[in-house]
Length: 597
Image 1 (cartoon, helix red, strand yellow):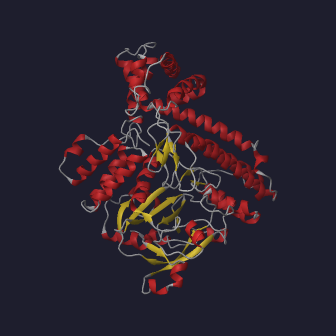
Image 2 (cartoon, helix red, strand yellow):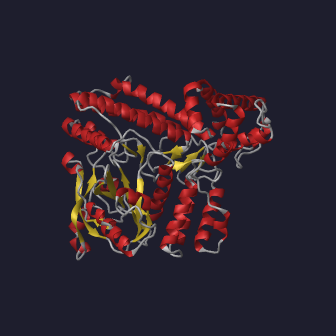
Image 3 (cartoon, helix red, strand yellow):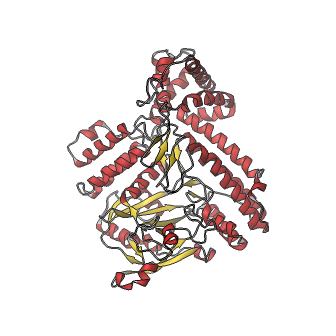
């Protein structure tokens, strides 16, 4: 029943494509593991379990999961101290830690950086697609920043500059939950297949995607000026995208690269627009380390979903500050520009400076894709149906632009208190939570205005219903400017509704849809942290399958798509079971963190 797991023996075609692009490690079986989370739908998609397999763990399935993924590499320190692993059960294959550019390293050519605590388990080939699979928390490699700082082999578990080689259980569970919620809402992202708990706070998280290559894997060879290696790596990436059915490319290399740049530009433009409109922070930078090359979210350690536009939030990474929410557009565009530079070098051998690609055709494609996706996402947030949105994207672009300008005024207002420190960085909190307004406005027009166009909500109420609870009286004061802006917003909003179809009918469709899409108790970064801590507290009190069921219910309750949303119902919370107790804690954290980062 579980024979497909045997494909994950460490073998991977990247070894042939990039012989110098990885560090190989033998591995040993790590005992004491327990599967605390397993993604059954993903496992069925990968062919690891039958599609009709029950969403329950059994001994045989757990044993094969542990045999496949519960491993620890024998690193350079271990080789120098063979007694530390004498008698260990060795895995037959070898597992690669791949090399790529990384911001934390002083070396800017990728000579010393890459997977610092992860190895690649291999590929899984289904009927129509190939998926990469890798595991984090499998031991410290020579590519971690700490190995370069200490200038000597590190023992797994030490604490030298990202040098532990382990993965905390809370981080891996948070990644599993957040990435699955994003995936089910149609966001481009990696996914977590399994989380293995070792009972000491450490874990192994198994990630997968149809293509786990990062831009940093390819840009490494551009930085080093190695044309043949760059071309082989780029060709491998393109071949995988095409064989998986995502892209359709011509065979002639010059036109193939040109068309691939168009695909990349659209993917990155759409991703950047999604991140900005949905208030999702992820650290994009020049190295292309924290994103998949295909244009998808990767590495959830610093990913956060905000309740509102926290565009002043910056993550404190000890020796540097991250980019912010609105800078993601720039850095995604820069990554597309570097792809253009890399394609030119791979094709011709010409090493032109990045500035020479300021007018590259793919950047115009990026700008168009960003603009269109940002508009489409705004219409989604407002609650328009797909047919209504399609009509507005064709015939309502002016109305969309007018409403966006009106919305940004309120979205950008910040509290008088100024910048404040957080546990992991800083932010300047916004005064207004726009989603509260988008959820309440259509309901008000139907109930209080009778669904008639021209009936406006009073400015004081307009501002009050979306004001954050932490906002002071000074922050929410009603001025003549705000009164005028509130009237203008509503006029633009009503013009957009009228453009989408019959005014009252459109308004009636917006009401239930916007209530789901802008659900008040939506996931935030803070909420995930606290919820995962509660899950960890309950993991010994709950039966394994009950714990999995509780996690799955939380995930389902956060897939905020009209018609698919499955909120946690009151009767689920009233039961005197430990699962209900956990769900009550989940709902409490969602309430307490609904306005945070």
